[in-house]
Length: 118
Image 1 (cartoon, rainbow, N blue to C red):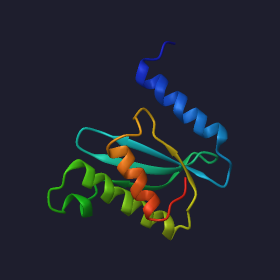
Image 2: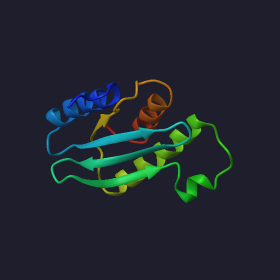
Image 3: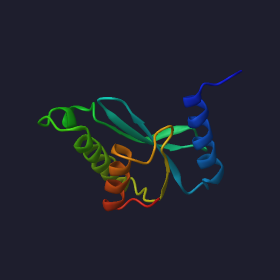
Image 4: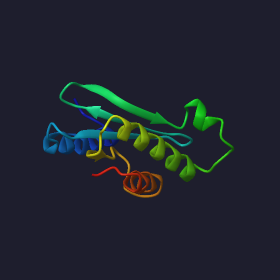
């Protein structure tokens, strides 16, 4: 079965993270669309999503109109707060297909400022 370019990139990056990831760390996977940004922390050993945050959620969506970079900062702050409440501090950052640039970079830096380690 032949995979297209984006599926190959996603598969390659995710598998590298999964191979290196020990059991005490979870994987942070992101999804970036043209208008929204979402992220989730996944436990690969049990194949479940522990925490998720998105720019489509009511409390973020009801805020005054922001640009896309501000949305990614808000999602990062919300995700970091939820993760620290569940005592998750160390994660692996799975950027997927996206380059570490722009909204993805701002998202990662905001997570680091709020106490996450990766």
